[in-house]
Amino acid sequence: MNATRKFLVLGGCGAIGRVVVRDLFDSHRQNQITVADFRPVELIRSPRVRTVFADARNFDPSGHAVLINCTQHNFNLHVMRAALRAGVHYVDLGGLFSWTRRQLKLHRQFQRAGLTAILGMGCAPGITNVMAAALLPKHSVKIRVGTKDFNPAPGFPYSAQTIREELTLTAWIVSAGKFKEVKPRTGWERVKFPPPVGWQWLVRTRHSEVATMPVTFKLRQCDFKVGFDRQFVRDVIAGKIPNQPVSRGKPDDYEIARVVVDGKILDCHAHSRGHMSAGDIDTGCPPSIVAQMIATGQISQRGVLPPEVAVPVEPFFRELRKRGMVIK
Image (cartoon, rainbow, N blue to C red):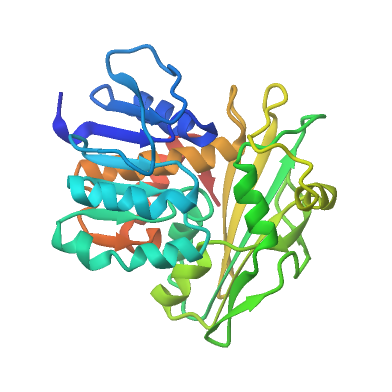
């Protein structure tokens, strides 16, 4: 077994972790995956996959090429430091702005260790950052995400805690070149996406893209908005949604992640497939793609880096297309 293709997925039994594990398994026959979770369950019966118990606050990822962190963002610093001590590269799904800024302070330590850590490598943040880099921003980046769910009883694939924090913590924007905090759940905007998503009401939430892209590109303007049903927002605030992701039948949805860069638009289209929702696919496949790029040397830059700095645009887009996601 090639040592560069040993991956550890922490939180690998969770909603998104399962997608990461499946993508790693399907991507290359030499990929060897350790699924580590506080509540471990066997996901794939194969000699290439082993499942172990792990506590994100105290574990050792030694012996792996890349650690993919799919835990709650408040564990990110614990997990990053474990990767640093073990000499293992690192990828995560985002730090909800505040944690991302703290994680970036470990840049020199990772650089001195000859390690790469890429922060926020899902859909948004993640795909959106790389799309923005493709358009070479000079002044402004706006991120807009819209979803159409055709399931009569839709669920949600993400952590309820994360959604609750996105909607209740103050949001960050960049205006006139300065970071500013704004009230949560403000800035409602009606946006037209291509079919089948169509018109969507979007609201401003706290997100990690705004922590990195304004610094990377020296932007004057940057913000993030996502489509949430207004009743769903009210239920989140009232604590009426469960703490675990909810699945109600076979997924049937379509998601478009958009970046508007100095007036130019790029959209990433994703649609449900099998038992995976559009959100599963566009969030769970990118960290697998990028972890494999790190392991095989396609990404060689060292330090703690956002996706727009480290991820090669065209090779990344090619990998998205292999998984049914299209950039338009």
